[in-house]
Amino acid sequence: MDNASLTRFVDGIWDKDIVPVLTDYIRIPNKSPMFDPDWETDGYMDKTVAMFETWARAKIAKLPDATVEVVRVKGRTPLILIEVPGKADGTVLLYGHLDKQPEMTGWSEGLGPWTPVLRDDKLYGRGGADDGYAMFAAVSALLALREQNIAHARAVIMIEAGEESGSPDLPFYVEHLAARIGTPDLIVCLDSGCGNYDQLWLTTSLRGIVAGKLSVRVLKEGVHSGDASGVVPSSFRILRSLLSRIEDETSGTMKLKELFVSVPDDRVEQAHAAAAIMGDEIFTRLPFAGHTKPMASTRVEMVLNRTWKPQLAVIAMDGYPLPQNAGNVLLPYSIAKLSLRTPPTCDAPAAVEALKRVLEADPPYGAEVTFDAEAGQSGWNAPALTPWLETSLTAASNAHFGKPVAYMGEGGSIPFMAMLGEKFPKTQFVVTGVLGPGSNAHGPNEFLHIPFAKKLSACIAQVLKDHARN
Image 1: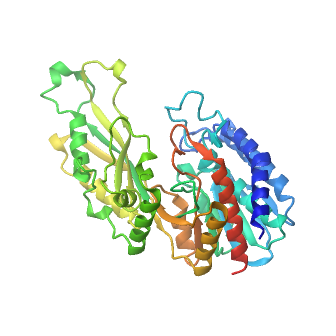
Image 2: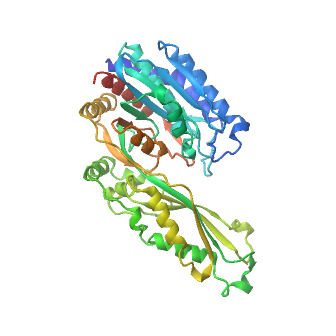
């Protein structure tokens, strides 16, 4: 492979064809079904799918016998399926998604979730990095190989539309399309992160997630605080005490044994290496307020905390007025939405059961306490890399970044990875992505780092080439 030609081709297709369509994509408020109950009628999903389909058809036409299809099943989100025949044995499955997280507040002046802004080689706006770029990166990698007449195996690209809602339709589609997908010997997932923008990063594990609403009710209706305080217990105080059953409020350490696993030795070694590469950027990349400090005292501990340790976040509260609307009322109830990240190999159903048991047991003052848990999602720990793939990733990163590949687990979840890992136990995985320092997926000021995305596309092309020769 001529790497200089590969770079020129990838840079050209990104600048001319990909960045413009991603710019238009950001303008569409195509929120995932969990956040847009009217997604079937408001047209945003269909508009996005049509945009992606049109672009893919125009580009895939250059690849002999390749096909693009939008698979639709009543009551389910659509799925884009691209099939590209190969000249080598095997099948590669490449994955991404096109649905988005909601707006979120706090965007900087001049930026917004549906307002694309190109600034300093970064494309700001919701969805560009998570995960609109994925289909374009996958197709550009295949086109780059075609440009140099380099063989690759059969490639199947799946772009789903419900990942941000937990991928409820993806297991159905994997079974529905099983005969067409086949048994991939390599799966490339382009929906993960990177520790910096200086080298290729391979995601070695993903945490699972347990979520639910913890509700505490002490009154049928709110009453004057001067009349009730001191007689009626505060629902917030009870809520706070219940959370202390599962989390140490001083250190943030979780307390339930069902939430912990033994961290594999190789993942500990990789955490040390990642900490050395990233340095203080492990925490300085995050927008700490004031003099807030990290929870952990060492870099390695920070890496392990966000990849292999359970962590609790209260992501929403109900039962409280805004401060400007608050009267002197003792509120009747408190509801907290809990999001608990679990270690990659933690048993999610067991974690759900343990949380419900501990939170609902013996409620203080006999208050009405319920924990309505959503189905837990287990995490994923990648299988060991085969020698050819490890060599390929290192060569690709050195060729296009000038530095070797780095390895690190991710603290987030990609729901379908555990499912695919179980379904295809002998398959190799390349899980990577563009979500690096400051990219802030799900939050304000999300951006796609375009130079990194270009180099990542080139790296995927090299991996596809090497896969065909092994």
